[in-house]
Image 1 (cartoon, one colour):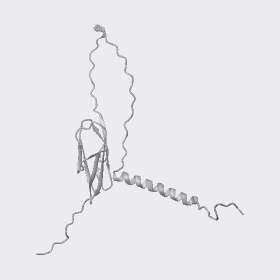
Image 2: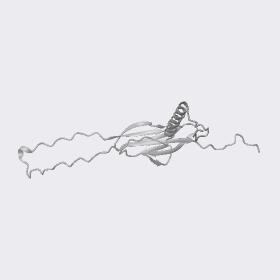
Image 3: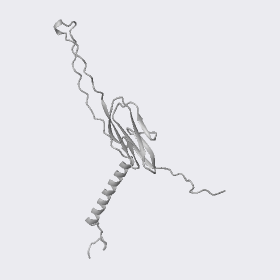
Image 4: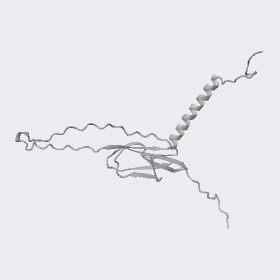
Length: 170
């Protein structure tokens, strides 16, 4: 007599072809979910702030009390400086567009207005500025740009009003 504890039961194992198919299907499903999240505006990519390490303080020495005539120089004329510029990046989800869309360069202190243009049958759903929700409307204005900014707008199907196709005669 044998000491077979399985009593005639066989273990069924998944063959490698089935395992490969299921792994591929899960991978494709994960990619589709990510793409749909990006298109709907639920997922966006924002640049992270660069980490900086503080630099050591420079050594400061006191100037002489009274400069000698040979040490005095005429005052240097200041050269005009160009204003700092910032990037304003606008993403529009499925169902509409924005004007301007993409990345715009704006001088520090200048203003910019972004108009949201829903496609037929769509309306503005959400607007986020640097990740914070703002009131959804047809446009958004930044009065004084002082940093790089990201504006995300998502659109949703517009609410349909039920209007009768005909009216009954009195």
